[in-house]
Length: 113
Image 1 (tube, rainbow, N blue to C red):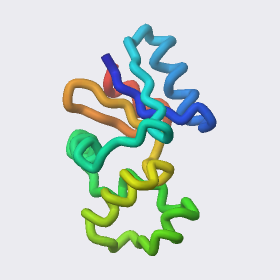
Image 2: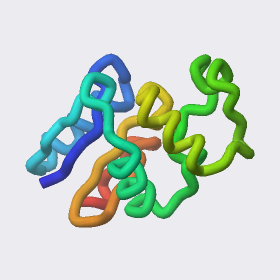
Image 3: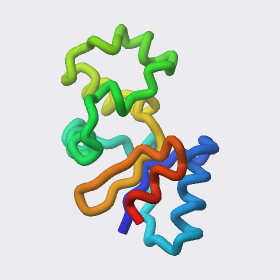
Image 4: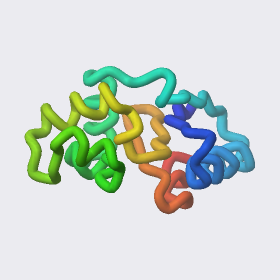
């Protein structure tokens, strides 16, 4: 089962979900904007991705600047911001068996298949 942090309004997120479905993968979409992950969940996904917090964020989002964040902000501040404002989480993210990938480009998701 692949857990898929999905935003249906995002074309990349829709494309990634379509790719998974075309490949016959069992997918559990999570509408993370409505069902925001906790800081602990974000930390688990960050570890599975093997990236820093800022590398899994949408730093171009208006909210990033409004929250006074920068690429040099402390990890804990960035993690808390993603939990409080899930729009800051890069999308989509596919998670399976302790591994995760950001679906940008969409083909990156194939690493889980």
